[in-house]
Length: 267
Image (cartoon, rainbow, N blue to C red; front, side):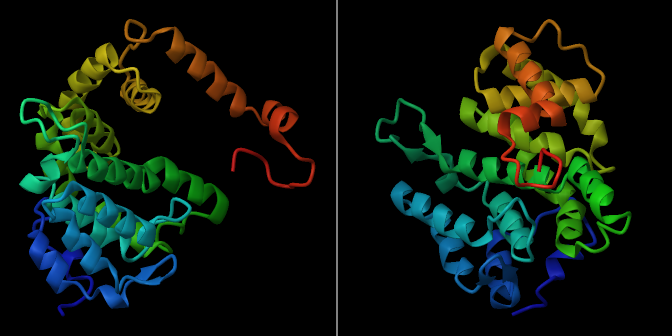
């Protein structure tokens, strides 16, 4: 096995290692997970390229169960993220279940699942999460979180795999790629890419009814000082009003508090 953190020190931060190199060259057993170490991860990750979509679905669950816990970045999270990004262009990830008819697109492509997880993980390590940590734990928060820091440093490499899928034929893949790309572009090397994401976000908002995807696209456009009034529908306005109420501690406490907690919501 090579050094377990060799993939964090690439001289080209926007280049991904080959997926086989990650699989075989990472000392998985030495990497912490929420439940121990990542010893079982290589077998699950390898099965993500199995030709059987049922095998891939089970492998994804096995892999994600090992590293997902309370929106936290662990040692094993970073090479898993790199591996997911490195296999996004592999043919096996193109398809999912219900793909028996060659004339119909796969309804649940493995590629979309991988992108969804990469996007969620990117939000778990975004600037807002860092700011929240600094408010609670002080300015040294990020220095005390080497795994989050490692993921943030590798965002250009992950983005290099996500970007080509912004124009994918499958709408689920396109939407997942956009949602993953948005937080990745907080990296200083990637902020110029936001211009291309604006058009993709506007396109999503004219076609998608997915609440999570719409919220992410609208939040991004507003954060980047773009007028979204022509893109919002009644459901968007209602969702924004609910979010504003839930952000009000008095409202939250009146509607959700149990009387036994001493922390201010939201948690």
